[in-house]
Image 1 (cartoon, rainbow, N blue to C red):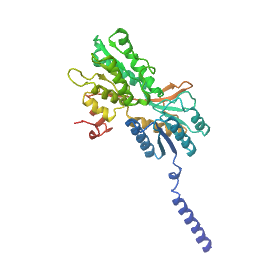
Image 2 (cartoon, rainbow, N blue to C red; image 1 turned 135 degrees about the horizontal axis):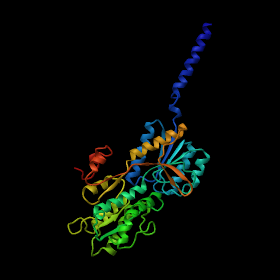
Image 3 (cartoon, rainbow, N blue to C red; image 1 turned 120 degrees about the vertical axis):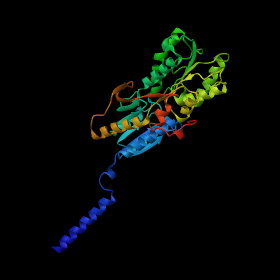
Image 4 (cartoon, rainbow, N blue to C red; image 1 turned 90 degrees about the vertical axis):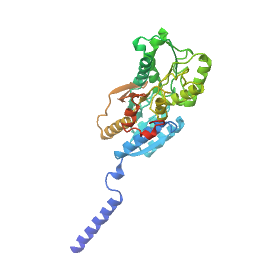
Length: 360
């Protein structure tokens, strides 16, 4: 009997050692989330990727984070690899929202849910959820800022000269930004209060900038200033985001703007990139829309938790992607200008004061 007891104890000790060696329950069974971002070349996507990864890992998920260098074939390959790895959820900030149908067929067959991150995945029924900001509202807020800055809402008649820029045609959000802004500004263009001397207002045909590249915006602004503003200042530039605004500011500086005779025009932006906050402080850019990526990351966590727990996924909107209405969640947007940038961006802990060029 004693020998049997000793033998049983030895078996239990061995089993216990094996369990400890495997890391115990839970640790080895952490769910794997695949996250793909468009590029590392823009500050915004670096911060989004880092925030999402950190938030997911804090909740106990494993994360495979990839950047695709703005190359759609690379992003498709990255997603295919994540499917092969057996990811439990895919979070995708697409380069071209309409170019993922084939790879998402594979995700569907593997029963892997897909969350579109801030850029809607279009022309497919394989997009399950969408976490974003109110992107039509972004453009609307930019348009309303221009109206207020010029006093158009108080009856100011101008006329004021304006040029319009648009984002990448493959990014579904670019069309939403443009529509939101033009729904506010078009009546002033029609009445002659805002004068677009180039006549170029159509998105994407006339004003789109591929891949949101600063250099593309700078080149186009150079051409506009040379062709239409050699003997007249430009008063307003509608820029949908900060990377374009950087190129526009570079062009304006080269043309001599920033003096008493040639003040910087009213210039909009989006993302509150550090460089652009510096531009706002120096008076080179008027505003930027703040999209707090910490809030968006938290929303992705809430969606992921609900999906994997089989619970109702939190949504407050839907977006039609050309095939289906995608259940979505719109996070809040705000704008930063010279009066509130510190409270909004530094006091909230989003940036350190030392992060901002020329901040005092």
